[in-house]
Image (tube, rainbow, N blue to C red):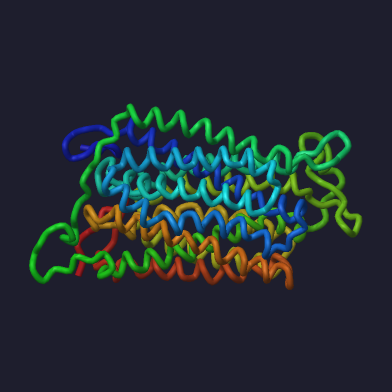
Length: 445
């Protein structure tokens, strides 16, 4: 008999709960999508270098780093529902902060809002990611988390569109209005999450105990009870650190790459729906404008979303760790093509990179917490903490981009993806499992 993706061993179907939790993935995808097109706004408005504007990513991921462990501890005490509600309320506070931040009009004020929203999102990710893995049969854990993360991809598509509208808008005289309207999408997010917190308060969000494959929850003498004694978890933290580092670097400098490295645009493109996407560059040649590149970022996130949906299907048929290894290797190749500055081929490689990044975060996450039982919540907080990689690498990429150009800066994510590929191909050895399909581990050595 074919198993349902959302029916647990007790016969209960958790599809409604899964759908509600998936809405959280859309929320933080939208917020992250706006963050990823914000750098160029501050570069232009505050006359910052690439490396300086990367403080946006630093503030964003610092929020994750600072709140990951507290979020894990509180989630263990409050349960899934309590952790989600706390996270939503923190996001609301951060969203409303952008209203006074706009009047303060100082870089630090915006960074504070970015950091506080990220702290709230940390609660949501720490709870929602592992929760999706237990809302049905364990063999489909990777499939469920990738489906939920597909909602994240949808949010990421609309985030740059909102950013393009409110960060890079101009009035009739052609003067930028971004500084006056930047707060609008964040205030809207704050209103939405308050409504969501009320919905979750009244919704059924049961705590479901996960399978304790490694006996971390019992008191058997001689058995290690530390999650750090399991190499597949330790390397998941490392792999997540470098993956998010690579992702953050590519996403945050997408606009810079598209406005500086794309070959000359034919004048025939500057018509119809795309009119206004282009403007003369310093050499007088037609190139993408900041607003046009922000809208084009949505195409990148569409590739990302396509990778998520197709990846969810692939992970039902092929071992998750091998798919991760292959996608990591393909991204190494994509970054190499960008680094070599091969014109439109390199531009296409950037979008290919979005596609192959798609399954990495949820798959690394699911592989890392596999078999950790009730300790999965604690392990989850450490994997979320590893997101701090996204605060560091954009500054390195920005520094290289300032001196050698954006194409050359792709050497950094290339090295990061090589580590992800290594983790994927070595997971079976690290976890002592032969292989998994849909993340159902088969007993190994």
